[in-house]
Image (tube, rainbow, N blue to C red; front, side, top):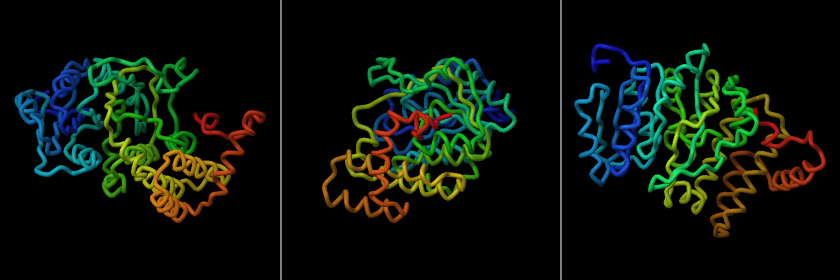
Length: 326
């Protein structure tokens, strides 16, 4: 595929900020893909390390269509996601985070199954965790259980949100996902772009509701873990909980079929999450008032969820996130 004489099926977007030490490994894992009909878009969010030096090595690569540098850091990874999506030309987009890696057949596998469905919004695979030194953990972070025996599964996107993503963000890493660009462009005004911690959860939810979700029960992605992460800061400050509440409010406004008992359980889980953070009393109270206002919930939802957790041991039909998952 030439840079100007062909339209790629896939656009690969690599958003980078100060990951120069991982860039070569990441980009090599993309260029070594068995599926080759892709363009490569390299984005740098005003890095202060030698990222630009590494990125410029690929300037003449036949797959590279853009190398873009921000003059100022955006402070949000999701603004870079949308920048890449706007630049992309492919039917599908892969946000290949700069510090992650993929098996050579990641794209080939995802494209094959995404194309089998008429209306695929998301196709995603399993992940292994690995650390800064490249040591791979075999910990089961996908929690597939018996699902892994199916090979693949396809779901209505709305059902997938109702039964899966409403409870938690099961799609733990963007690098494990191939998604439809056309649908992502419909989210240009979505609040996810301004979020700092949980915007991916909202992005996957709003994307899913436009088509189908395909799960591929193979581990083809490696998700890098660092000792200092944005999610750690979100727990310390509680800002992540406020974003959780905002996302739940948006989901509930779009999913009229959600039973009230289910909504109360989910809100109770949010209370539980907040209480486990052991925040300063004044900070906790401020966040509590915020989530009660935006979700119209009360502390009674917390006690309902706690009672539900006890009763589930004796009532196998009682609703829980695990039992509700497709």
